[in-house]
Length: 220
Image (cartoon, rainbow, N blue to C red):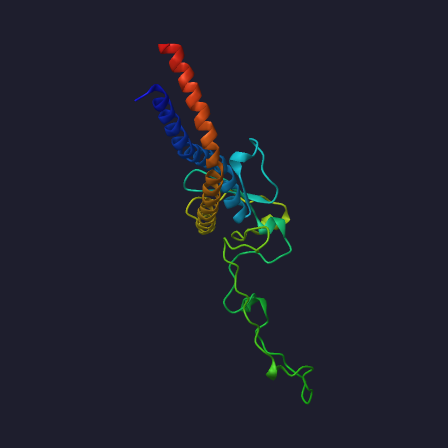
């Protein structure tokens, strides 16, 4: 094989391999760069901020520290603190918001011949308001935790422990959003890497020229 044909063959090999290498390198680089975005999107899905991204000792207002099983810690916005005038999570009696002890159970006694002011025979019973389950969101900016009355008066809620009902719900929602965001970013990274692959052809020529120069310098 002549020297020219051998050099041309080397150049073609470099040109064909370089796009493949460019796709792999670009994809790995984009995947590593998107990790922070994936975590941020997963945290936003539960209205939280990753504690690792905040300065030491900093605690966002109206938030509760929620740990995950993999060691990640989230500052989750608490509805009781963010919206103290709204209904918050907590147990509600099945028969209504008030127990019988809160209402005078004795029937009213009317004077002989007097008519009651209101006809209560057609009154509708008060329907119980179902409690908001811990871990549920208001759909816009916060999560409901277990009811702690002092939170409404400026108190701080204690950090949530692993295995508690609200922690389990938040972690489940976090990882569901994490998997979704990871899939979306992976698809985008693959498409971006494929778009960048044609740059591998000129890069292959450059690498081949560098290889020939080094070889010439070594072997002469």
